[in-house]
Length: 347
Image (cartoon, rainbow, N blue to C red; front, side, top):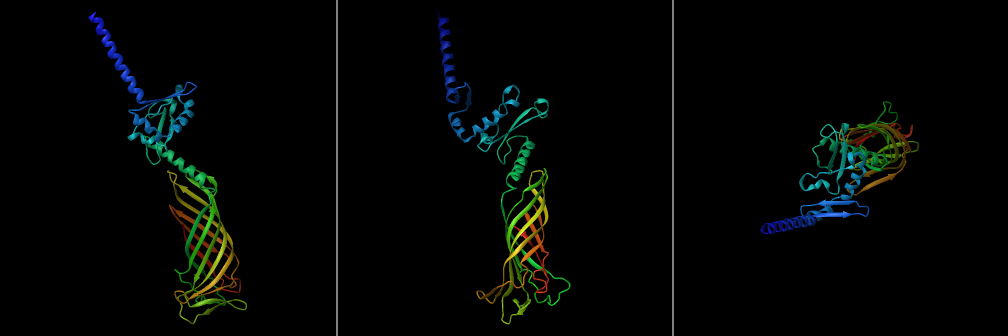
């Protein structure tokens, strides 16, 4: 009888222990039952850990894992969380699944799941993480870099290329100040891809550009429209500066070759092409003091139609440009046959 009572007591203790265990695990788990008998079971060390699941993108994990079920043996896929606080599974998580040779496990093959966050490696497979980042950069270039309208600010300097035969004009009359003769422009363009490779890309740059050529004279002279040609009149009063400004609307077209490193970042580009445009406005300005200015808007026998050659050069994030007018600044026999050369940086 005593033996029977001992067995009953032992059974009760075991039952209480089991009930306590079940209650503890039930309180620290989350079970979702669907009408099609599918269940999602999530275990956590405590209730707080399960509440923190709202910070994780479980929908994305389930969706991407479900898409890969057909490629996994026995139709089962699992993810093992490793790392501090499991932060790799936060809502910007990306799951990468790879298959090796002959379905073998280990370094030589098998199905591996690499989970990472942007900028943080969550696996010892740095190569896979790098490949993912490279693919993401390439996709970004392909999706947004081709047809997106890009605004460029052009800042640089102007100079004049003077022919050997100067004719009626002494080059000393219209000699320019190197630093004062500035070039400013704004460009709205696109660069669709013509040929795309892993490490290089051939694209074409075209844009609508408005720019200003400022030709600041070193001598106290100003352009004046004469009877049949432009004249450079001497200024008798003391001045701070004198210049001729020409505003142009232009259409550049430049094929461009871009080179990328193994991380998918552009390290170099070079382009050469041409442009054509029209003179929108032109004026001379004489500045006598801080606020005292004289402006004269006139054509000054300038060529309205302008066209020329241009080139782009980029090294890392530095973008340079150079433009050379094939048309003289002034009309034939109505002004100096000098041609404008502009160069600078694109921002």
